[in-house]
Length: 96
Image (cartoon, rainbow, N blue to C red):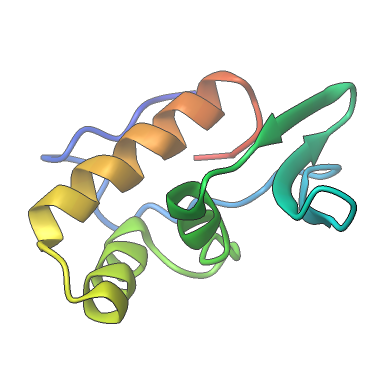
């Protein structure tokens, strides 16, 4: 398992491992990332990123899509995406 520093990882396609999924907790109105014996509460930024982790989109495509959708600075979004994916990969909740 490796991280994705900004200068490398080109063409990397993140995906959710088997048994990991996004779920809305209807009772609390909170998005969660569920894995066996683990739950991570997601903020709106993490949800927006993870909605795009489909096992087909590259990290670059996810960043480009978010930058366009939110009219935000691509470099800032790139850092946020890479940090979240690296953190979740360390918890084995995203495959890189």
